[in-house]
Length: 178
Image (cartoon, rainbow, N blue to C red):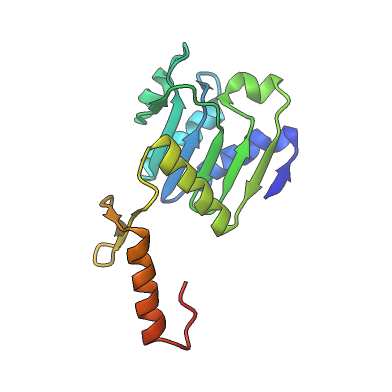
């Protein structure tokens, strides 16, 4: 992960949103974007381009999410949420910065970004397991004919994975099966 200077965080978040082509994950407990026109425009672009948007905000606080709904985004509300993550298919940002215009103009924030595939996968797994409450051992698969991600889950026990690994290792002894 790479450090982001405090005055560059909101710009990096905007760029991440604007560059999303397939998937966008926004995790921000506190959301207030009414006057944050650049952010609203970036989110409108993502909606218009049919980017799959997962938007998670805090449930047990008094906030107006009407601007998010007006953009056609239905937020997922989580009790006591405090994490802040912004992820697209190529980049992830972990920060103290909420999607709150006040944070953009007044707060001293810290952030890190990554474009490492492994780190992005780990952050997506956090979102799946802790925020979307999907089982840790669930797998998504791509329908090759339609080239789209399926939301179906295949549940595999650890011993089954070990058996598969042994089978492929025996069948292809010169390959490194992971």
